[in-house]
Length: 134
Image 1 (cartoon, helix red, strand yellow):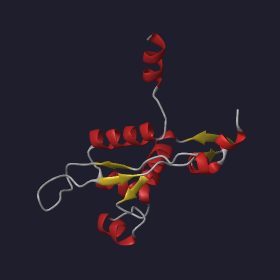
Image 2: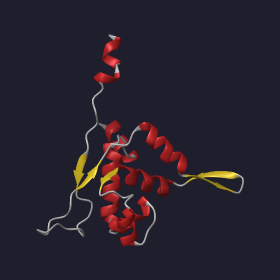
Image 3: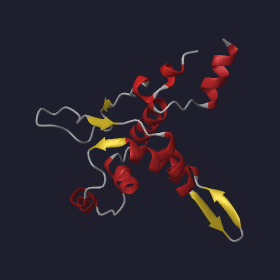
């Protein structure tokens, strides 16, 4: 194969997505606000995953909920979850807590997490089993 095909300038960029994360935040016309989600890089994902490993006693424990929340927060480009004024308005001090407050409907939050996972190439065990059956 031609090495040139593997050079960075030939790599396609993954697309951002518009996504209505919640029906509780509306524009002037009463339509749900569109958020902008961005793909997370492999390096960012590794850092997020490492930040979700907690030491308890002499053992390490992976906090899957914290990882998922941080991954979702990292993927939200708009609104800016790092904005201090936005965090203050919800009484929180970190992006993942802000996201949980803004999308406080559990079904909507789960759908947002699935969207983030999908856009970053993660598939569920059920999807893998369904694919294997076909």
